[in-house]
Amino acid sequence: MPKRTASPARKRNIPEPTIARLPRYLRSFVGFAHDHRPVISSKELAAASGINPAQVRKDLAYFGQFGQRGIGYDFKTLDAKMREILGLHKVWRIALVGAGNLGTALLQYGGFAKAGFKIEAAFDVDPSKVGWELEGVRIWATPAIRQVVREKKIEIGVLAVPASQAQRVADAMVDAGIRAILNFAPCVLTVPKSVLVRGVDLASELEHLTYFLEKSNKNEK
Amino acid sequence: MPKRTASPARKRNIPEPTIARLPRYLRSFVGFAHDHRPVISSKELAAASGINPAQVRKDLAYFGQFGQRGIGYDFKTLDAKMREILGLHKVWRIALVGAGNLGTALLQYGGFAKAGFKIEAAFDVDPSKVGWELEGVRIWATPAIRQVVREKKIEIGVLAVPASQAQRVADAMVDAGIRAILNFAPCVLTVPKSVLVRGVDLASELEHLTYFLEKSNKNEK
DNA sequence: TTCTGTGAATTTATTCACAGCA
DNA sequence: TGCTGTGAATAAATTCACAGAA
Image (cartoon, each protein chain N blue to C red):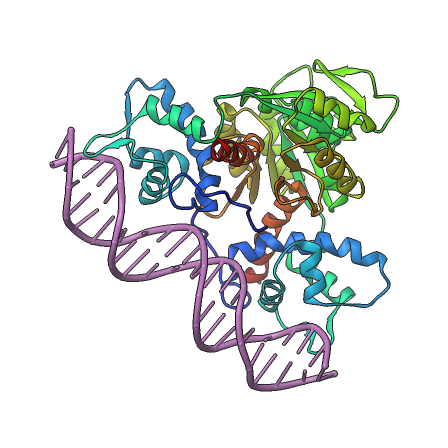
């Protein structure tokens, strides 16, 4: 875990695992939105998100007291508060680097847009891709990163390039003033501590599963 | 964190975070493979993977003592051992459900194959996709899951379907005898405890970043 | 000397259990 | 009564620090 620059949190310092659970709570709200009951209890939220009720209460309480004792949490208030905490009241501008298979996939994948993110530009080294649009997103040559990121005030970069290119691209993005990077390349990036990096390694996720499968194979013998 | 069925580990019980770090170590080996030095120290491995050296040693020591005091770890031995621990000495058979944007992306994305996984079959509800091949992988109708998974002895299912369909598909896979699921749908799955589930929510990863961006915005004002 | 392996100390996270409010 | 908010207790993970092997 990289050391966080951590400007002081609203209240004490919020544990990382708590932050990681917030989006999960947000997801479970979707199910409740269809019900008409205006109030949700920590127990219900816990059941929907697969988390212990005490944990739910503690997580929420880090951000203030917006439950009612004896009653529960007002659903609309909680949903709004949660989105505010995660910064989802605004649309964040994203640049995608690497319009290969994974990059194209991410462009076409509606999940980012659905969650309220806007992919403003894509970049690729392949000249045959440059100048085209994919899902309404213009593909630029990689050296244009600096200019385009600045002009479009892009805040987050998504890296879907080979590991061998990732650091070079990250450097360019940092230079262009990006504030956070979501890195799909299976490598560790070095960036100034003012820039946030989060890595998602799809193969690692499968390997995590195979570890347990292998272990249970071993134990059966 | 879902309660683990956890058949006893080789030595004590291995902490979850340790397991999550193993693939990361494996990735950093790639860089060292090009060097010709046969030995790697916990310090070097730590630097390459962004983890504290004591943590590296502790993690590795859970699986036995394969370092040499005063020297370091034999690179080839460590690499082989790591792959064995993660079960990567065999090719795992995978079924992909959902050949929409994300699913197609995952099919085309070379990362799984490169890491030694074999996508044996894909499934989709859309009749216009059924019967075609994509990247050499045949697309079947969703109801064929049970038969195909059994015939091809598929062990891991990757879900790239909408959240509304995910539980239904998971049920079918469990019924077909799948042992683990990698779930890209933003929802919690309910499965028997003998089946492993790991969720990857791409939008959540961005939200984790925006939490910190938002916080630093707040603190600047 | 150098660098691993590991108990002990420390830090961090989770869960319990109950006071306090509607 | 029912359910939140939270200190206190417990559990888990990380880091320290040093004994021991090459």
